[in-house]
Length: 451
Image 1 (spheres, one colour):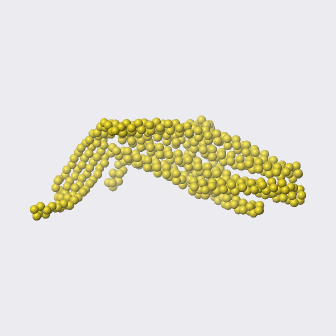
Image 2 (cartoon, one colour):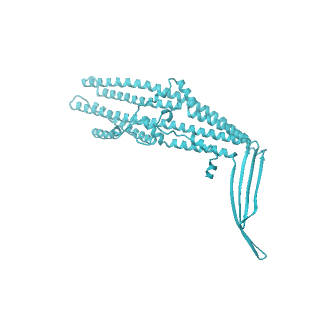
Image 3 (cartoon, helix red, strand yellow):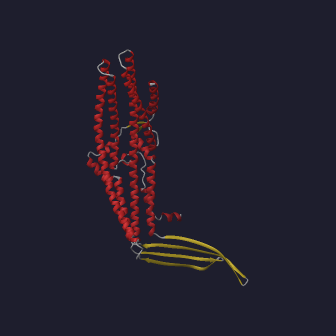
């Protein structure tokens, strides 16, 4: 039974690791680059930013003229005193409408739209950071998962060898059935741990493929992005406070809320508009009414609107206060993330040093215990326990090294520097800035019609 499982495990490990070994190397930078181009979340954030930019043009249109042309026709007839008359009638005209003053309500709405577009641009950067950090986590989960699978497969071979040794000693009368049973129990535990690590690795690889768009190949945790981390936590906090996209989003949200309050208050003021139209009418092939036109203006001053105006101002004020409170919360969350990531790096460094010492000591202890068992001064159980402690130390080292890499990128994210630009990824940075500048040209629609 043992030999059958080891054969199956060897096949499985070749599928999980051997195939990757023959594949092309895939660095963290390559995975981040592929994910940046692939990520649906980033594309969705870009489209949302473009849609938000259109609100600027919509806001500007409130004080720009609307010009339209119309044509209508009819066919009429009459029968009077036995005399029939009738014929077609066509009417054409051009109309002009424009609000020339609205107590600066439109200006406030334009400012709110611009702030919202800026907020959406920072949302792209925030989504970018979340996507790239998820990729790093998935990358390290696959890498550490493969290392754990290899370690536990090696552990199985060790327990198999100990079981065979215990069985051989029992056959020649130098061992006991207890030694055999203990070796069998540890082998069963090792097989269960191995299967569990394989299942976890499969899930990690699926997550990696979802984020990056390709299956993980030969991975390596080496990177040079630690150079982006400042020398002190105070410097990291200062950088996060001025550049994190979440904080910039909060500032833009406050601007938008302030503009919304201004727009609500402007609704209490007067508005003035002008209208004009010109047209003519043709009947039976000739102009019958000549060319006619009109020009008018209208001034309105709100007096009472059933409480709607006051309610809108109060609602806008509450929205502004809410945005300021949320900004304070975001500020605290960013600081917390920086401190947590910084502590994570320090903790991972300490864990790596401790795990390396434990692996070195555990290797020495295991070798000595095996020699003592062969001399009869230690038991098989002592050997099995020493191997379990060594395996635990090696697993701790794998986990600590993984935590160090993830904490490094988590700190970059907390500082607002986990972006394609900061990392120098060879990609075209997703941004709606150019699109926003284009939609600011509100006369583009008229030129398009003219062309």
